[in-house]
Image (cartoon, rainbow, N blue to C red; front, side):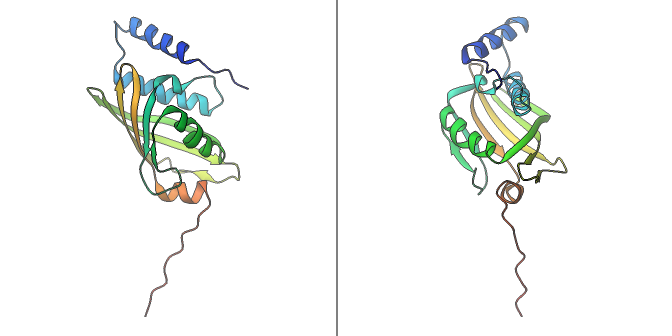
Length: 168
C-alpha cells in the first residue's frame, strides 16, 4: 500500500514551490506538476495528483465512450472516472509532450500508454492526446480530455468494430 499525500500537504508543497519561484506558481507549472504526479501515482508512487484539483473540479472526457461525459466534483472524479478505469488498467504512463498556457488556461499534448489486466496494450504507437485545463488559485478547476474513442472502446472494454458489408 502506498502512502498518500494529504490535501494539506499538497497545499504546503504548492506554497513551498511558490516561495521558491518568487511568490506564485503559474497555471502551466500546476498542470505540469499534476501530470507528473499522475504518472508517479500510476507507477505506484506516493504522489497525490488530487491535491492539485479543486474540490469542485469538473473533468470532461470528450467522446462517446463509457468514460465520456462530465465528472462534476473531486469525489465523482475519484469514485467514477478513476476507479472505473483502474478496474481495467494494470499499468499506465502519462507524460507531457508539449504544454502552452495563456492566463489561467493551459493546453497540453499528452502521451498516454498502458496495458489492461488481460494484456491489451493501450496506445501502442504513443499517439498524442489533448488536454485543456483551467487553473484558479493554484488548483485545477476544469479539465477536458480528448482521447481516441476507438482505442478506449476496443482496448479498455473489448468492443470489436466490424466493417459493414457492401450492399449490391
